[in-house]
Amino acid sequence: MIVGIIGCGSITRFRHAPEYTANPYVEEIVFYDRNPERAEEMVQLFGGRAALSLEALLQDSTIDAISDCSSNEAHYFHTTKALQAGKHVLCEKPIATTVEQAEKMVQIAKETGKLLMIDHNQRFTRAHQKAREVLQAKELGDILSFQTTFGHSGPEDWGTTKSNATWFFKKDRSHSGAAGDLGIHKLDLLFYLLDDEIISLHSYAATLDKVDENGQPIEVNDNVVCILKTAGGSIGTATFSWTYYGEENNSTTIYCQQGILKIYQDKHYPLVIEKKNGEKVHYTLEAIQTNTNQTNSGVIDAFIHCIQEDEKPIVSGEDALKSLRLLEKILKQQDDEM
Image 1 (spheres, rainbow, N blue to C red):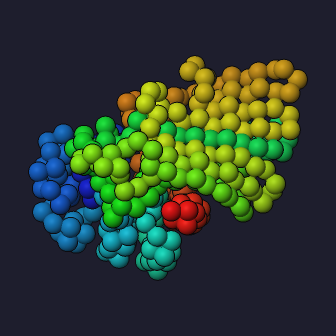
Image 2 (cartoon, one colour):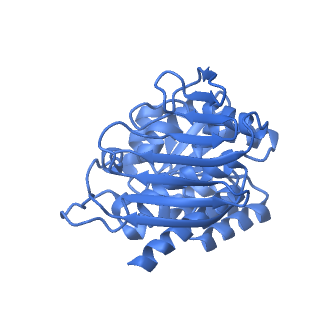
């Protein structure tokens, strides 16, 4: 199988390209970036070849699938073009910058019969999958409440440019700030773990500390705090931040009738269950992928497998659309308070 990648920034360098290279069913990668030097740099690192234009990439009949690793505002354009060109697509999150765009992307995938998968990679970690198994089996009874957080020191240390001029800080390109960069992961994870609908929310979003290349406050949020209520009656909080200036926090806690699930809080055990009777169960699973600890996410392998077996992906366009609808409500509350 031959795959193409649109956008040759850090997400391609550290995740997509290495994982495609490691997959035994991928024969070659074709790179495209609007900056040709970046595409050539990826060829030097991973082999394959560079496409001279987006049109050349999409019209290449040898390419079966595309990873859309472009910036947020370009996902709709690139992914729809790739689907219409007959390619399966793995699109980075968030699926789009508006619900309307995402709805069109899902519809085009249906019309073309091509696979559309979104890179909400938290569904693929063994700790989250095991936690879902426990919750689905009602081993701890019903879910009562929950809290989840995702925070690190910000994208300016992760991006290709390593500067405050990063596109993540620009409203017209990022659109949704820390909420769309980190929060969308946790919103999707809540749908996955709770297996419930979120029917009510209140959120606070703010720009507390980040500044752009001119020393001015960035145009998007760098912190978000949400209070959520599900259709099943459980309540909880979700927090997302670009200002955790220390160790990254990617933890989730689920409080149930008969105990607590603690995910990615213990350094040695990614999943710990504390039961009401005092018993503790420790699961030795893989550590979660972080910006400074890049491991195989399983996303690329799942994408290739779904194409080969014609299976529905664990994160479909419809799944991503649910999370984006919730994200849009969070951003609307922010706008209404300004």
